[in-house]
Image (cartoon, rainbow, N blue to C red; front, side, top):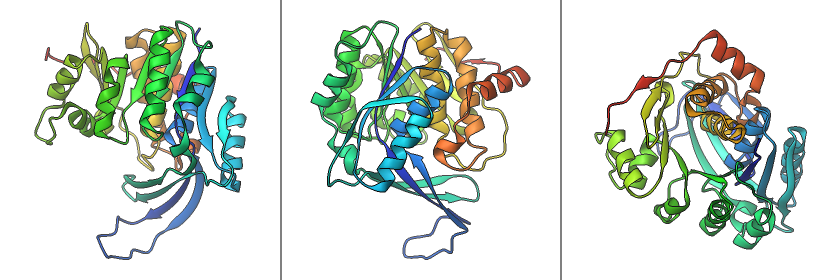
Length: 315
């Protein structure tokens, strides 16, 4: 059984629940305010740990009280934090999140210490530690050079490299030659492939990304589930119909389950429904990290409501 190494952000989420998103120049009276642990790196690390994986997080926090609480949160979920640097005089990352009554969200991120993670720190954390069967997972809320270092070290060690290419930046294209599994939503798939436009079928974007060298592309489709485009086959797993409270961490729950089960050596047809169900469970609760499900919940959901894959025609 392999381990999971996550290179990514640690944020404090400042969450405002609102009847609807304000228009430009408009003030809307919110319904509630709460503070949660967040950041895609921390979220995915905790999600994987709750699925039973051994997890180490590589990143950076500040020297403020929010950052101290975020480290405590990670430790409580058995995530190793020895490779999370503490930056004196630098605030930790913050995300301002508006959540509408529909459950949809709008997010603005201030990177803070996340923007200081260096390739040297990633190399120090990962070099000599990775083994075949391990999984290295990164997102784009830390600097691209640090992500490239993680992907390169993972590739050299014959670990599985997973990139969640969000938030989108054109610079992400320079990483694709080091990525075994790319996880994106439909918009990000089109942006990365350079075929933007809602009328462009996501399958066309996937085809182009695979031509660019990515072996496996996973596209999250929100309430439609997820598309799994592997070299040998393509299929979609539909999402179950569930009440939506907060979609903030749906993708992180999905990815955490995916990388945890990959590290166990599970095959794609076994892990795909679990990943989709993990995302579906997360949207039913408020807050990023509080919403992330534990393995027993996911396995029970899969048993009670199996998700049957649907074939996707050759692209």
